[in-house]
Length: 280
Picture 1: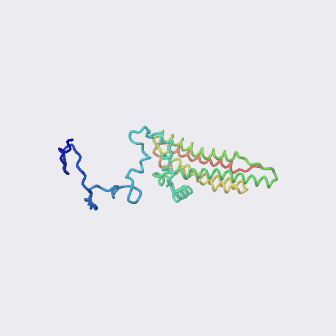
Picture 2: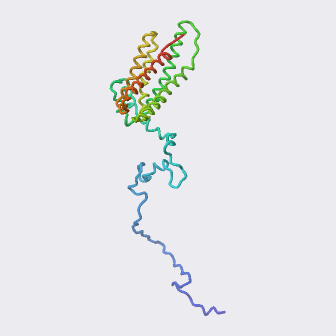
Picture 3: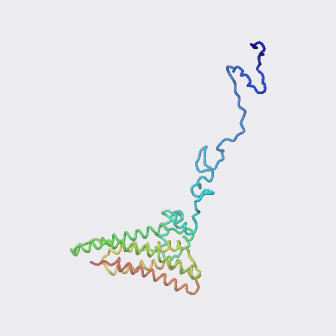
């Protein structure tokens, strides 16, 4: 054989061959040089969560805005009116705000309600005022008729129509009348905010809550006086707060204010006839 012709290859690099592996030492000391890489997340990262790891600045908007290039439509115009976010600012009031506005509605001759609510009209107060009126009208009316029937020893049956009638009256009045006034003012080039009108008319109904509570007094003349005073306060509150704004409508502003005043008195008359009058 030709085994004698082979020569040994040392531990050196030879092109096209694999270098031999040297024996590993028993202990190897490894030193790391200072890295210039930036730590993640940066110490100045923006976000609302405190701590070392915080989300980016726009993390809160990731679900509020459609992703770029997605098929999610932007809600704008009339479509936005059917979202909860469109009405959220009108319920952003606290108890002190609502109580202050209720106090202004009981002092109708100040005429400062529109100025105070010009930048922040709410629907929270009007909604609960109307809801409370419905409950008070149904409960007090039912209680008074029950006592009257028992005194005269007559059979008494609960009338569910009082609840539905009250709901239709108050919710309908505080919605339809401001809408009609909004269109009228817009026609006469003196537009007013629709939400502002809803707020004004909603708080104007608060005075009827104590008036209904006083309707339990079994004296017809007292009930007429209570209904008349409540109607005058409510009508004055709405008319005086809209007077300065409606003056810009031209020469017919007085007719518009008079119509607003008389319409509130008509509401008081309807309440007296159907809710303040107890018949057995």
